[in-house]
Image (cartoon, rainbow, N blue to C red):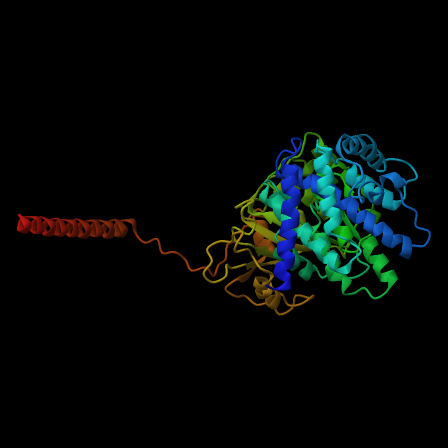
Length: 496
């Protein structure tokens, strides 16, 4: 058995052990609660292991946590607090103290990170004995300060994310890794550029961008610049907690730029030039409606309760003049929709260069949604002269994607070889690629739902001809049935 298989088996065993213990607890109801419970425990374990590192590497480091609230004080000893004493400590001492860090004055950046994670966290477990068993399992099996276990933590995170998807209703903040990777590769972020995901979910785009930028980091100052240039916002507690944990796993020790908030809840006009960013890369929630009043944060021409449309208005507003670039996943409905969507698309063509739309096939987001999606690539400083469309084909033999047959990054080699580099030069019309003049799109009332002109047209033929062919087939079938019946009768007669 390979080392990788052994590691995967031990990881699966670890997660299963924790989940099985939690299933015995009457307070934890369903996979989502079990995952949430596991994540805050793992976060505190990671934070404690990181603090040990910071005390050696950060001059004058002071923990934002009183000593009795540090994991090493109350959780590390396997014979430590348990039963009612542990539940009482967690519910009435630990959680109130950690939540307070989110809003208290004078809290260090490290403390703000902890506070933002625990702001809406909750201890679902009722049994202190079972909680002690979970804590001991985590403490015994993983040490973040061991280099090998850092890799294990990444795997734990991926496994938790996969379990969360299986728990249902996770598609809204999950983007397939291949799509994320392709979008980052095409935007090609450079060290020093500011990058934002205004609906960051569990942080997939941000992590992908960090991995891309890590190749450019040469000095401690470069590392600091990277940390200061990545921004994200997520309004739901569990994905935000996962995003914070994920950032720390990927070397962002103080992910204070990843906020727990609703980006749409701030007035559009209150954003100043200093809030604008170089790059935006995101998959905003689509198909959802915002709560009453959120639309009033936007200019009258953008007012709608449809989440994806409001995010598009925000994205277009937040890109830096002349240099801002974006890659955004949007459903087909945005391409052909009217009303506010038409306003947004007109401005997209008049004030931006909407240079490429990659049309993804159905099933990319399966099983979370069957809605067909697109990636829009655009940059500030229009107007658009022409829009290139690229229809991503299924691999040979595929009729759709599934969990066992997902979209892979290698499939995007087609787009990458066609793209034409950073300047997008030498693009050619192919079976998958075509272009449409912006003036033609304006004449279509900004309907961007342009079909591939190279698809082989289905010959529907003349209805009378089809009916004659159908009747001929029916007669042939009746004749075959009559012949079979006669043969059966002859056989039965012979036996008699």
